[in-house]
Image (tube, rainbow, N blue to C red):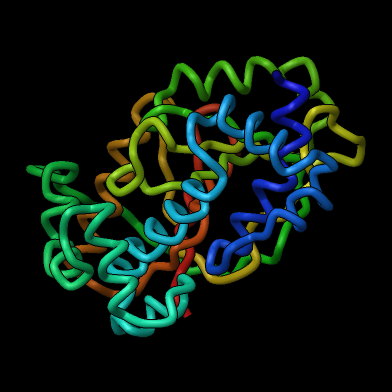
Amino acid sequence: MQANFSEIQKIIDHIEVNFDREVTAHEIESISHYSYRNFQRIFFKLFNETVSGFQKRLRLENAYKKLIYTEDSLSEIAWQVGYFNIQSFSKAFKKQYSISPAEARKQKQDIFKKFIENHQTDLKIEFKYKDAVSVYCKFIKAKDYNNEEIDALWKEIEPDTEIFDAAYGVIRDQPLITNHSHCRYGAAVTSDEVIKGFVVSEIFGGKYARFTHYGPYGNILETYRSFYQLWLSEKQFLLDNSDVIEEYEEPEITHIYFPLYG
């Protein structure tokens, strides 16, 4: 099963890069070297959803992030995520989330309300441009980004730490939007040597808001709360819907990079 996961990670990456259109069966067969039917079976066994369901979910989750992170119009967002008219986009969005895209945007504050309730912040945010970095990466489904599964992933690759130059965590989903069981976390490392079982990928490559968590990783949610509290109250900048990157500088220092829009 683990071998299957490593093999299909390339096609998952391909689907994610092309979330705004339907990836064809021919593309999947060409990249994965499985028959489409066999790939469907393996994918469902690993992720408990169909390939087409996964593609549709990615579109709508990215749309939801754009609704709350940016000021793009509903028609622009519909086009950006692969819907040719706002009517079909609104229908699919409402079926998924039981509210319309317009209502989702209006309820932006409510989405974060419980997460940041009664939370104060004195967080320092810097704005930085980060060049793309080539990494070896391995993803898992970490329910609600719980530390137990994330710790287990890093322990699994601990024997290779001597050949790592830098280590990063890739936060692919927004758990306030994505179903908690579907949240994905990637352990990413830079190395001059090949890391078996990892897929070569790129992270960064753009403008970011950077802030720093000091202390044990188990308390990192408090720092995320501080960030969202500041972002919602000051509205200094817009966010992008791409990956959030955690950079592990020292055992108790984690730099967190939120991608900026535009």
